[in-house]
Length: 182
Length: 108
Image (cartoon, rainbow over all chains, first blue to last red; front, side, top):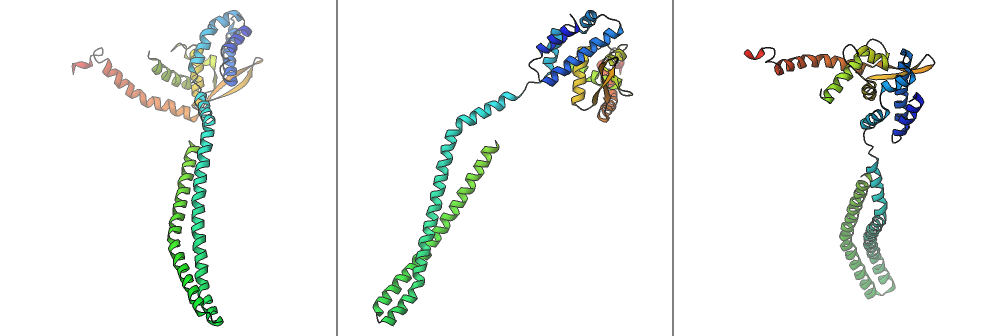
């Protein structure tokens, strides 16, 4: 076998290795063959002394650690397949979250409206006296006070709902972070 | 000999061969020949492992119209030899125990 044949066979047997490893191996054994030839061996003898190319290739392949590529590819496939489900889950979660915040806003809006009504109370009473419609004025004032009461009543649930919404938001964000990191 | 044991020992041998001056593959084999038979295919993975472990570096130099790879020991490689020198005393003690009958040590 000539040196060129040896190199070609070795290269072919190491085709599963990365280019750099393949080149390195072929260079090393090529150098060893050259050294022997320099000592006086013929090309055929030098190649024979270095050893059967099959064994050499086997040895090199045995030393190479197995590539962990497969695990990475499987992970990506899983994510692609699970994506529709994942998307549905996210949409559901976002909708619920949005609905919760809508409730919070409605409650606070109602509270604000009532508060506005309560503030109007004294004005309406005053106007009633001015226009001589005292009864109406007092009645409207009464309504305003009720509104004020309602505002105060709505405030507490509003705060509670708000806290719940914030809590839920944090939890969802945390979960999302964990999943995307893994 | 146990393969792992031999590998470890041969790694230190190769480092010792390039400790005082850079050398190339075939020369390393010739230097070690009086002491231990080392084939090209045994040497190759050792050189690769030592390079990966940063105990030696490789450079190419021109020789007779072709490129020859020279190996140079690093400080980490020198430390490996020194660690082995420390291990050596322990190895001697272990051998003394294992072969205590042969060396008449068990008569105590």
